Image (cartoon, rainbow, N blue to C red; front, side, top):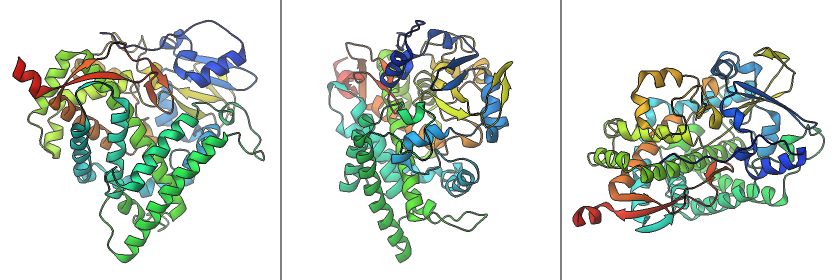
Length: 451
């Protein structure tokens, strides 16, 4: 089965029709030719942007000269109610100082410390799942949030505050459009950005709940009885250059993006990966067989070679963050085209990962491609689900461990079949199913006994 992707059009409607489509569904609003183009220019009275699909441009922007292509201030304005001045939206020295504090907590040698959180949440997910047809997205969202709270604050999602944050975040996702006027217009600095009242309200609710968690943990650190989890490690790590630690307000910003990046993105990819397994029983059986010998340690996770390939293929076909935006800090010439200062440079994992000139049979689900040398070569600058270069997601390693472990646990416990309708991907805060992602679950022991 070929995984679905949105229908796109080459038609040219009015600007306002495009804006409405863009706000409703980012993926289908863009033209089909982007799956073959190396670079495309879009100019309107509102914005001047370039979609960059050439791997050489990706390398230039993200790896070779990232300082010349900072994150867009328009993106920062759009996400400010929830994320404040977190590491996701800042630039320059402010961003560098944040990464110096955050990165040590996610170093590869320390990732084994998150395994109890990951396997605890995976076992809880399997225990919650029930046989029959269901939308798997709410379950993967709950499970990914569970991992974040266990890893950050040593509390499962059933904890009252954690459950409140999760519920508030789901409401915020519904209120926050993919594109708002703060992202589209060159908004004057002195004028408040036009976030909806609901967006501001839900963001404030989430930040208030997070502030309570941060204050409690800061107090526990002062008393010397804080657990050794990600939150404690980050709060107690000083910037090696200045000696400063995060203040409580700064830590609220960081926890907000940890929750967004670690919850929404993981939930999206896990849901699509489960649907892909349901639609491809031959790969599902291989994952289930591999999971039978899984042990809850790094050796066990490292042995999940097939499962990791499946999860990586899900990241390719359904990258949770479909587009990233950078800004030209000065006039440039890219592929022979003049790019003015302030132009928006769109890096689109959605189009890059399905680019017809870069991938063999790009729309097909083929985890085996990741064992072929030509794929590893072509993917060097064409596979960026976690971004790349100095701004690569610090939690990328954690996300890969979490995804493989959860995928293995579910496939070991259940046989999966696709629902009656294939899900249609749309871009909200992450790539989700337009009407959910429906999968039929049968306990694997029940199927084996009746075989």
